[in-house]
Image 1 (tube, helix red, strand yellow):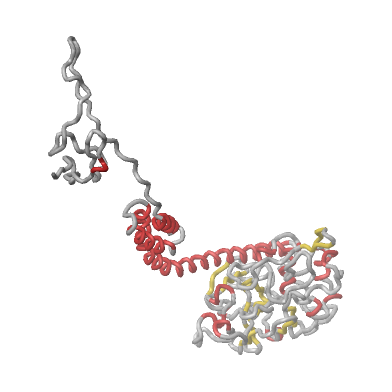
Image 2 (tube, rainbow, N blue to C red):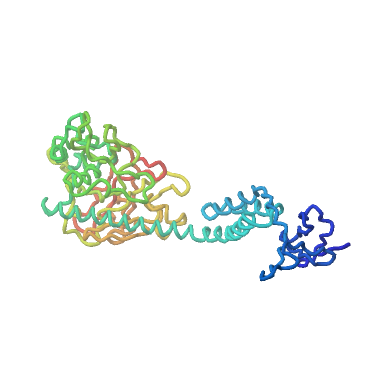
Length: 455
């Protein structure tokens, strides 16, 4: 005889093992006691109430004995579902894990179509859909972010150069209106020290034994002005005076877009564990050593070659500062710039030829620009302390190229010579033809090999 559950309609006539002692049925589909006594073919329930109530006794309702729901059998944990959920959540932080979570979720749904597997599939699917969108956005935004960073670096570099110019002005107010300038060489052809190793020769052997006053006095001592190798005519030394006098810190001389000078020079030396002043130049990159860097580290800027031609240059009367190296120079006189490039060396985008004219340039802007700022241009500071961004070096007085010098009498229309010297010393043969009145021929020193970083 067919017996159907009154709730879900399932045939329960064969579910003998789901009957209690009173013969009541239990529906295996509903998991509840949905089969009521009195349904088709089901015997009526056995009542425990008396057939005839006693005198004065209230009639008692019949008590039906239904079988209790059997204990649920715990299902095994869906490991794939758990892993799917974990990997999908990680996809919020590490997008690459989202597709893994999606795949594990799909596999987990085949075993248990609910729970963590379902959640992992949904989250993983959403994050996987976002992946190509994010990749596209990154591809679009990265160049913009790099450009924004470079613009910020230019602004910081500009602030550094302005600080240098302002400190030079303050120095000049106490030094006969002359910007900081160590003694020039005794060679009228224009030798100068193009390396951080150009330090005063009559200093103590241990840098830590030298105070700022001792170093400055040595820079200005005529007994030291016998050659560029002994520290004479050092552009770096001229700038280091500002550090020795406490007007600037070495960090000010670091351009954030300089690929080589990424850490400031050390100002003080350590002798037997005691900090004592002072290192005598840029290029000391450790507080415990005395070795000078030869790779252009610790300094990012060049200055206009400050020495005027003197046919009587001698040990007693070395080259002195020219008329452009004073506090009342014209507003269009360049004084400080990003590090000047060494001309005639390098390969690819590291090649530099500073004598290429703006009109004849077929290489790209990098060919005559500083190695800072990816060769796109340079910040240039002028005598009135204003700083501007220039994409060519032709920004001196009357369009003069600030990275070359004139080696003929036909200034400014004569041949322009790029500085090719690097290492310990350099020679500029411009002094004979340098005008004694404006417009002056500007040339920035020291120079640095853009490819190797060597001064």
